[in-house]
Image (cartoon, rainbow, N blue to C red; front, side, top):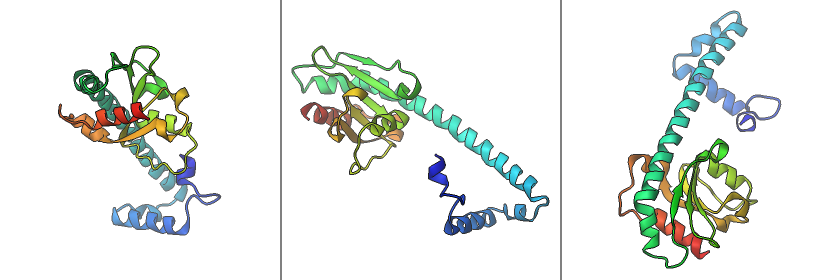
Length: 191
């Protein structure tokens, strides 16, 4: 996160600094540059930004939880049936979602032994799984749902399928006839 916003010894480059000043002026916050002492003005602004960042983080967790509940419901009501209509061996049996920590944003699709379990992952969990794959040519979009195997079994990008299904679509409710997740599961199974 720090590397995303900090560029070496300076907080940001000149272009970013000018964009920040412009943003402060455009939003009516430019008066803060005239406050004295300047340290107090900087701290007041930092506290304001920190409050908004805290709220964004809390709202982000609520959004992830809502996506998980919706995705779990779709998997149980629709996806299992869609996949099992197509495959004969290793049918999906159980949908499980009791994970915590970084693995919380994950839905497991169990299959009988010796078949590998499948996982629908998104957001932070998708980023965690992807961090274990050394691939520079894989353009990932963490606003999407991914289908994969258990993290320890993800050896290359072929084991990590990015779907066209967005987190927002899952939250808004996928229609029963949406086959995009089914197709991604089948693609992984045929890999």
